[in-house]
Length: 351
Image 1: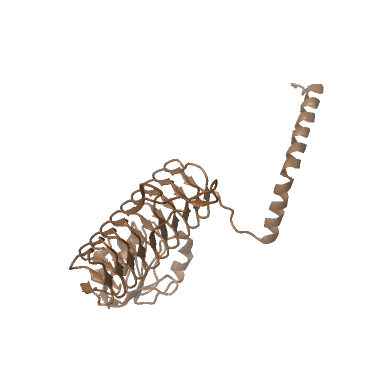
Image 2: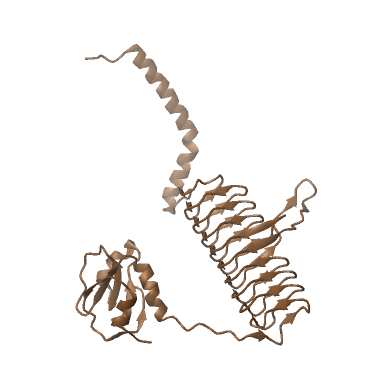
């Protein structure tokens, strides 16, 4: 596909610097890999040195960028380069797959299930008793939808997803392969020979939620585990029973959230964060990657507790120093006491 410069600049508002040397653009790419007929962008100042070295024909840049383009290259300076680049990238995205309506002959549909005539049920899918599948929803190959489960309109459930009994999925949800919704919460009575505590609740997923591959969301012990509208969850996330994730929150890969924790609205939880149960993360908070969260996080605060990777010898030295801290603390207290005695014995002269 080729796009004219006129069409491109019509989609991306901003100041044009330089003259593009070709009649059309035929793709998008990174600053390092882009060719003379491709568009790239600077979305992170970390990659600023790559701009001068890039052979991209057009580069979308922040408004405060001061460099000049080379011959035949053009810069577009705009307020939000990442957003502008996403618009341009959409011009070159592959065409969306159109799913055929109807039920594949190999799918197993319980007679009591209600499947919209406009839905697409792909090969080997299983739809349980009294379940409901809404208009224009796609249930991918080898999916399992349990009894009494409700899935709304315009959902895209990719292959090999399991949504167990009595769960609810709203409209316009996207659930990627390998996701398990409604597995039992991890509950055992340690006083009774580790006997299993019944998990009688459900999982409720609201509208416009996207759930990444191989994420698991446990059903509630009672009531519901609740993923509210607009939440975006990355791959390999574990959400425990009775967790509530409020509107428009983002959860990045390999996060683990223990039971009965409440995550506020517009929260960002970065990769590999571990969150203990029965706490609350306030609205607008950010939890940095690899943090361990063991108490409430106030709203609009940035929380971090991770140790950054370093050379092994430095790490061992730090560990050894940590072990000596109690002894060092005792010596410091003793020295402070002796210093006070000396100051009392030999008071400093005012002169």
